Length: 341
Image 1 (cartoon, rainbow, N blue to C red):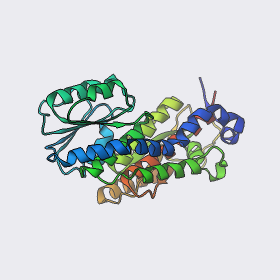
Image 2 (image 1 turned 120 degrees about the horizontal axis):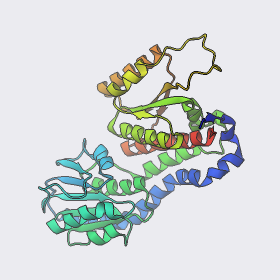
Image 3 (image 1 turned 90 degrees about the horizontal axis):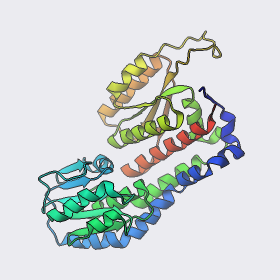
Image 4 (image 1 turned 30 degrees about the vertical axis):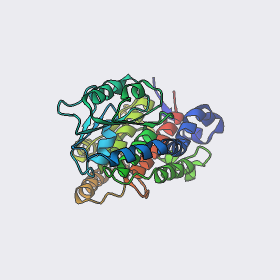
């Protein structure tokens, strides 16, 4: 089966109306963060008051499948040892001196075993999950705090947990409102109602069509956004899309055949797609990040590989991550919309 990209479909209202549900979900990302943070505010206040009467935990264990997002945010900031533990159980040393935090946006069984074990061991437990869910039932205990997140949105659930950890001085500034505002700004800029000429997500979709996207982010959170965007690209297009550290992506760029100005753009290339470098820039200017970005851009330039950069000026790390990821998600949706058999 062969697909080609028809960019005219991106501005065809009858076409993108067929995907209205997916675009509506993206557009409501900011509203979901605000709603979840508002509904969990009282539970956060109760949990913070309870934590004030206890000693600072010996360590923080982020358990469950979504623990890696917390690790990306907390590892550089947490004043006590921090461990991300995505396995069904807890590390053997975790006990009553430790805090176990769990993100369970779907409230399912994936996190229930770790929560039940944490309660049994007498750990301090904080769980963000839908009220009345399986995880919430397993979390009931003397030292447990349940932060209600009925919307089942993974990012909104993470923001609620980070709000709590900020207030107990175990994490950086989260600021749910700044995250929601950053998401709203992306939704406005990338709306299907905006013409292709002024829509950055539609333009990025066109740039990625007929290429192998190579997605790179320099900071820990930008790298996570890059991996998730690459996963979405593979799922939507059925084609290769790569994300990784600079040393893993450089060989891909360096192996690209140099572009020849005499190539016939309409000739059959045998199905070989050239790479396209997508840089997710969250403003991190550490020397290692700057050097890696320069090496990737130089390699792309030497082989005539197209480079696209997406930036954000959101005020917090989490807001910048959310902005870059949502911008990429819009582009992925437009890419899927434009591909026709």
